[in-house]
Length: 267
Image (tube, rainbow, N blue to C red; front, side, top):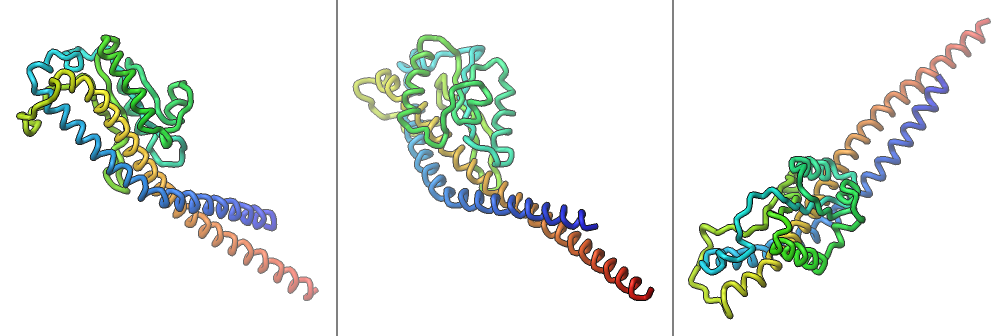
């Protein structure tokens, strides 16, 4: 009986330590949520502005001959995969990798330490990935696309729906497809549409990439917050259950000692 009480006390202490850890990680995630959401909103606005420009340019007959708008069969695919730097975020990383597995023939470009571990690349951080990093990567990818080294470029990231819901998604950014509804098509571009498109596409791809990164990070923070809340509740329930079991074991041990004392005094 004494051994059971000691084991229960040790287990309660261990679970309580885990509870303190989950609470701390939950608080850290909470402190990052507002900043992450603000960065996500700003990057969305920038990406939308550049995308609108590219959509207008895609309607130009002259731009139809541009290498960025060539028709391909999509056989040679490159995909940028954005995952987190740490675990303990529920199914955040697992959902990204599950979507990536649907494209077994693609060449993957990982961003985030977990993605680099998955695809055997040099570790980099998705949280500290800057616009300059995104622009350098996208300039290289756009150059390779124009040189016909691959047929299409996609980005696998996580869409932020709400604090409760985040969804893995893939966005195809190259080649540029002709827009159906691009707003005002009477815009005049200087010096000409082809030159502006060649300049705008790398900015467009970088804008989509950085927006995907910021949205993925906001999703990761939200997923970690919810995961830590859930883990904390489970840990507290386990502590309550173990505490009840511990109290019963102590009560049983005390009752047995009293019985033994009474029986000894009677003899």
